[in-house]
Length: 142
Image 1 (spheres, rainbow, N blue to C red):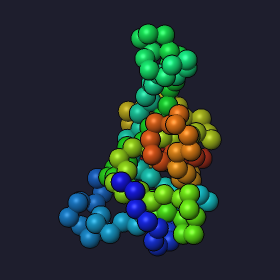
Image 2: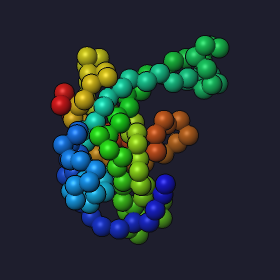
Image 3: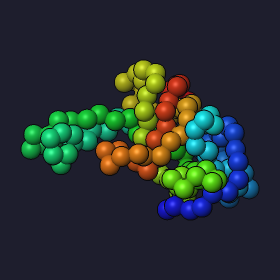
Image 4: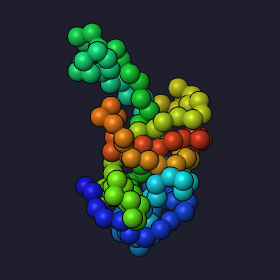
């Protein structure tokens, strides 16, 4: 769900299972900020396969498979819109983030709890797999 801009932020750490839904910290977690603000997220990392060219419909019918790293944060996140930027969109309850790796991600992390650091940006084309993308500069086991 989209929303308007508010607030500012810096590093955000979401601890996997560390805060219960009823704790004040979990209820009042600050929203992520778009780049250039750095973020740190903890969640579940999965390598997903999507249909690519030529039709982007089905690998089974001949479309090229495209492997994409996806992060499911420990709990859904929100992202603040950038004030005074008409193209900036704020989001609530983002359940999945596409990882754009700026570092190698070992296959051994597939299906594991990880910590990811980088910067958040919004999907800029129709060829993305999540509302929000994260340019990852570090991916490590949790």
